[in-house]
Length: 205
Image 1 (cartoon, rainbow, N blue to C red):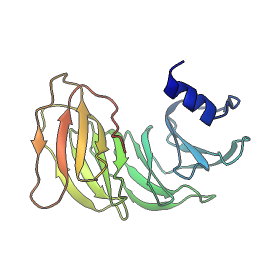
Image 2 (cartoon, rainbow, N blue to C red):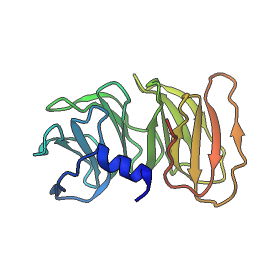
Image 3 (spheres, rainbow, N blue to C red):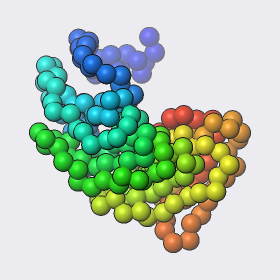
Image 4 (tube, rainbow, N blue to C red):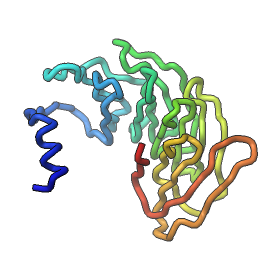
């Protein structure tokens, strides 16, 4: 066993594996930053929630309001907000701790078709999305106002992620070519960098 593996083994205690029953197919699952909620994006148009503050993982009331499959979910880094997106292009921000969660804001036509990924910026101010309409959009994470739109691409964006300084967005697509594109918008501080043939990306914090 490597030294770093030994260190991790000593630092964390082994816990039992818990099987959570869900009657529908799950596309993605995420823990909230506070660690108290486990959320799952489901193909019935709901976001299922479980109380993860204890080992019981009691199921909470689902977050509803989507028209199609929920493909992507992401948590705000500090606020109690969950972002969810579906196959019809709807984007919803919800308070994930409320018993009967209501939208903080929503956009029924955020994209023309499937929203593939949502990614909030580390500073909590912006939210990036990409979809099958070949658009990459940047929104206000607080009220959902559109901040910037990147378009006229010949490739299909599959994933987006902010850099740790929240000033650039990494984009993954399926063309399989080397990264070559950097866009520098004039009216805001968001830069766009392209990484090709990547379905899921993340930046080291």
